[in-house]
Structure formats: structure tokens, C-alpha cells
Image (cartoon, rainbow, N blue to C red; front, side):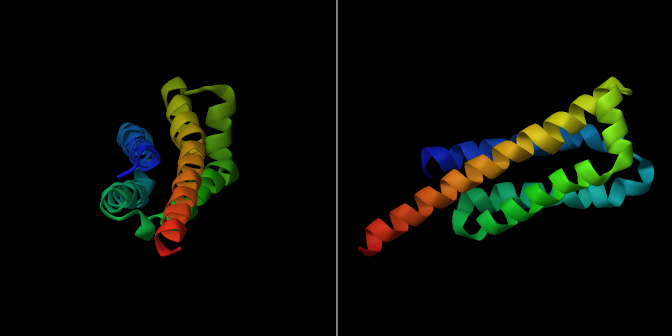
Length: 123
């Protein structure tokens, strides 16, 4: 596993940790979708550790969905703009934007390196 791929796995693991803190804070009616989303990030950690080529498309898709979902949700926007409750706002901002942006960046860098290594080996 290369250096950038390690960063990618670290970002995914960080998302899992922040998500684990955020699940109890969320609305109980969204508990099942939150657990499913958290499970998908855990699966992405495992897949990214084993073989990156199967994870890069889901990484892009799920990060985009999380960012879009946080941006579309009026309740999330209200919490983040008022910082009330403070802990929820911090979890939403860090987990929903900062770490997702890092996921997109590290995933793109890993994909670029994977493709260049693949071309070098075949060429």
C-alpha cells in the first residue's frame, strides 16, 4: 500500500470515528440510515485496505451524497449556521464537509497514482 492510499484509509477511518460520535446525536427516526451509511464507510475502509481499485468509485459517490445531503437538509444548515447544539454542529461540519472534502482529494490522488502505476507496469 502506498503513502497516498494510507492517507485515504486514514481519512475513511476518521469519518467512521466522527460518524460513530454523530449517530447518537441524530434524529432517532434516521437511526437505520445512519447505521447503513456508517457501515458503508467501514466497508470502504476494508476494501481500500485490500484493493483500492474496487473502492474509488464508491468513495467519490458516497462523499458526494454526504456533502449534498448536508447541504440540502434545512435542519443541518440551521444547526451548522447557528452552532446550536454546538456539538452537533461540529460533528456535521467536520464529518460532513471537512473529512468528505479530504476523502475526495485523497481519493483523486490515489486514483491518479493507481492509474500512473498501472500505465507504467503495462508500458
